[in-house]
Length: 378
Image (cartoon, rainbow, N blue to C red; front, side, top):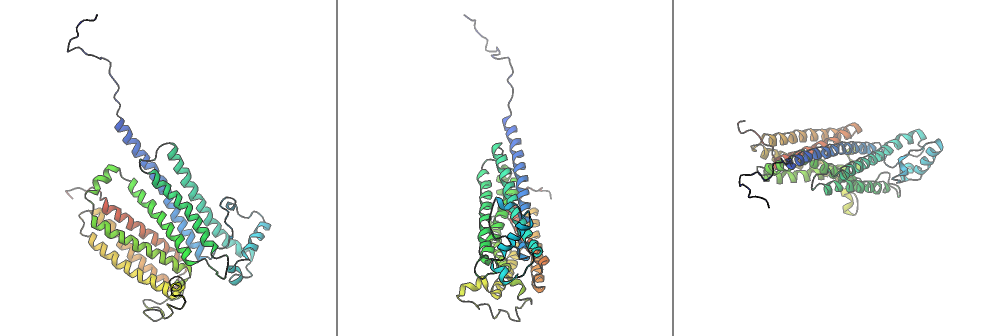
């Protein structure tokens, strides 16, 4: 039987190791966010390149040079002269060749084939980069909490984009069309910008911790957040209408500004029947809509910018200053593109300008909702 123990006696003398799980978890979380963010930034850059290459494919009339959709075996180009002849024979059966490019030589065909082949290859590369990155982080359990579903959405939209791309190409392989249907082109480009916008927003979000974002939201501007939503919607609509312009080469029809063919409203705006066809096929109406929406977007953008000038956050004011500058540049570039009948080098820079503008608006909205901390002294 043991004796009585003193109340001052040490029950355990051995020291227990201190496990600082919070510190470890926070460090791992920061590392995970940085890794996923870097991967998304690579995807973002690839999608931007994809948009540019897609625009050049359209401007060089190369999109219908490959008449089949083979997601796996189509990765290999023709490897012999016989294979090249077979590809050209397939191209000779479609309306674009018969009505526009009849008599095209094999060397001329190769020049447009490589554009479309490169466009499709880039799509495969983007899909591969997404899959490798996603499953790498998933298997290693390094995806931040709550982010798995968001990353899956990007991959799913990428797969849908591939299917829509073929749906678009298929519209130009039959009938009497020498180009793809403009509304399908607009759908294809519109989805590309949705993917780009989601990736950009995720990159912004992962650049700061959840605790920092939660704290910053308390001082965010609800009004600027709502106004910028409308600004994003207008910019997105303008991009889609711009795709309609590109789809029917409407930018090369009316080259005077601010009038169109000497008129405020073009005389041939409603030349097709039924009426709805004009909104997709009338070069006059489609370009008029693109111009008008551009004016509306610019004026509303300047209004939002003026409201942002009253923000107490320097970061918010700088973000909307960049939007305003880019809007002036994009409108100037658009007018110049029209005046010079949309040469490919101006047209592609104008399309790239749309990428920059939509991303700057997204960044301005993010900054207005989650303004970074700033010194009270300054």
